[in-house]
Image 1 (cartoon, rainbow, N blue to C red):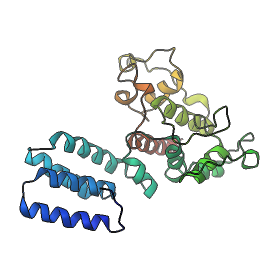
Image 2 (cartoon, helix red, strand yellow; image 1 turned 120 degrees about the vertical axis):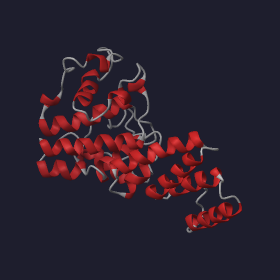
Image 3 (tube, rainbow, N blue to C red; image 1 turned 90 degrees about the vertical axis):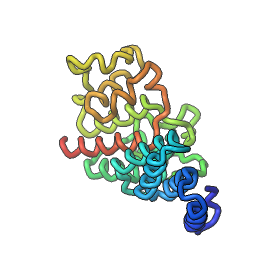
Image 4 (tube, rainbow, N blue to C red; image 1 turned 30 degrees about the vertical axis):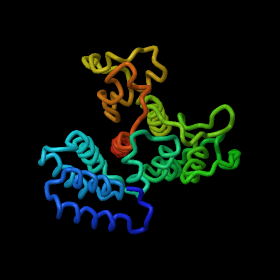
Amino acid sequence: MSRSKKNWISEARKEFESAVAISPESSAAYFFMGLALEKNFDFDDAGILFAKVLDMNNEYVEEADREWKLIKKILDVNPETLTGKRIAIVDTATRAEIAALLVEELQLDELYKGLGIQNEHLSPANIVLQKEAHSYQKAIDTVLAIGVKGLERYPDGRFYPYDLVTKAVLAVIIIDIIDKIAGDSYLLDIPEGNEFLYRNLSSDLPFYKEIISVLSLGIMDAEVLAATRLAPYEPVSGVEVLLAFKRLKKLFLNL
């Protein structure tokens, strides 16, 4: 699991095969091999092993059920890039990871360029780059250059790539993109008859309009964003971001 060697997944398979040769019904062997495959982005095979643990109904059932549900979500969103696959398995997405998904999965910079959308205040020539070494620094610089509400620099001029992104801020990011492409006509009110879905959302909540809009458009789900009063302040997971961006892509096709 340390993945310290280049051939770590092959070594893991050998250990797994040795383990099940000794104990064919070892739930632990199947579960941890499933985790190894998940870390190697072999999601189909990982799902098979987690399902095996559930069928055994012995040890690691709760853990395997959690991972199996995650795998199902990842296979549904089907990340198109290696970056997308890496971020799909994180429990809490950072600002840098969101920037990377915007650039690599959503290709927002190319979309804006194709639509002729410019941001005069955040053009590349006006950006003062900070010396923040990060594996997604190029994506961060791109997002800063094109301008995305919710992913701006903080007042001190730094980006803070490792800060977590809340569900409410993800809603802000999504609605900012829609607003730039289609205008504010997509900022919606609560649809009549659906008030009960959003009963935990106070109109005094920061970014209330954006939250209601992503829920009304079906880009984010009520059980994710409005399940409790604290839900909008909870960190968003990588697979939740990918699902929202997948739905956002579908919306673009209908604009």
